[in-house]
Image (cartoon, rainbow over all chains, first blue to last red; front, side):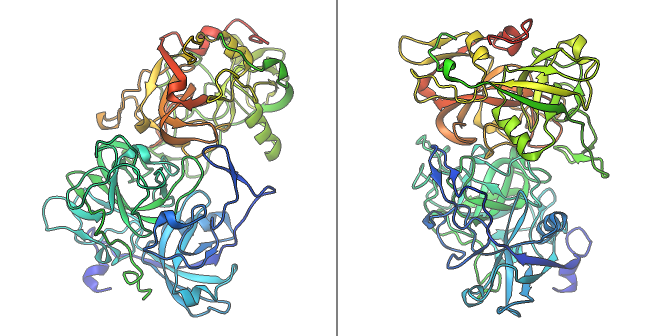
Length: 314
Length: 292
């Protein structure tokens, strides 16, 4: 980071903190089953822990699991330390394995999950294959509450490590709103679990129907998927990839996430679908602001969001 | 309600709880929609002066829980208390100066919420033991197989207006229709516990936050559009959920007055009747054990 970058748009320098994350083991209760939206039992596969073979760029709907995230979820055995780990770490932050057969491997934070808190970290597949639940990982947490340069007044940045926005389709010509390229723009009524919770530590699940759903914008022009397309069908998961940027209209995520007319929130897709009612692919919010400070341009076919190369995994 | 039920098959259980204290932490403050710090009462304890039929919003309060907020000390027993207790169930005070008084359940909100008459409420406080006669989970309407009923005492259902119509739909009286955009915290949670906070009812705050829901009253029956609460709480176009407003004013962003879920199913299974009197106060007051 250069000196100019270190002192961000707010004139303050970002602080980095080394934090300890532990690779999570999945956890289930006395019964293996959860209940889906139609009342059918299912066994949740891939809900936390260490998931192999799922990568940024994979379709969210291609996974036979529940909240499947690409890579390793990190936690901490102390609940308060676990919440701090998730609150302070930001997407793009570097991580390094300290123990076990993958010791020395480098990866990056690529998402967060809410409730008890999980930090989603990506590694090269050969490193992931050597990781084991319980392995210790150092997280170089930096960026929360820091204002990067090149962001217009009124737009708020969160959960983004220094330099992350440079790896995303974000542009500001020095006047008017910050413009972000996204896969789709969704109405706030699809916001599910995560609404009413703090965006610094929770993801927001998107209640999308499986498959094609309503028509999505053909590309280029901003529009709201499904509802605004006018065919009456709700937006679907088809075409949505892990790592994609998604915009949600009428959503203010500065503090807790909640409805505010005329606002926009942009986040990165960090995990896959879920059979649970009220759940779905989750976004970790990165940017929020009124329409005067933040706008989104949807490209259903050509969009590229957070990639492995963008966070140094290739 | 003129509808066939399986009420004779329902099991009644005696459950125990106590009025739970309001809880805080050493940082005191939480954060409102505009980032304003606040420290406001409303959740936990015995909240006075707000009863069924009273406005839900317009108070200097956060997560306003009218009446007594009841839990059980044992975590597993508490979840049983929360899941098995239904709106309309009778609750008897066992200890303290109000011992022997009876109120009724108006909803769930991580606590069982109990409305007592005003003279009784004045004498109930944190720590008082209460007994809940729980009945209602497992209630089925055989003529309406698409509709799932939950958290609803059979005695309450019997007193509600409406019922099976010649066209096969279930007539339900409601005071308000809630747009899907209003659904806040509680989405994705199970529907036998807590409730669905409605955004857009922040009395006294900005117009850009309003969804026109500032007129809701405690105890109002409402219909939430595009909500499927049969097996949890999710957005589902074409479905409808009937709930009762059991909590009021919130300052915490993304939260607000909330309905506890009573019925859910495809929208075409219901015939809604707009009725300003569709409030628990119309059906439960003056009877210690309604319909039981």
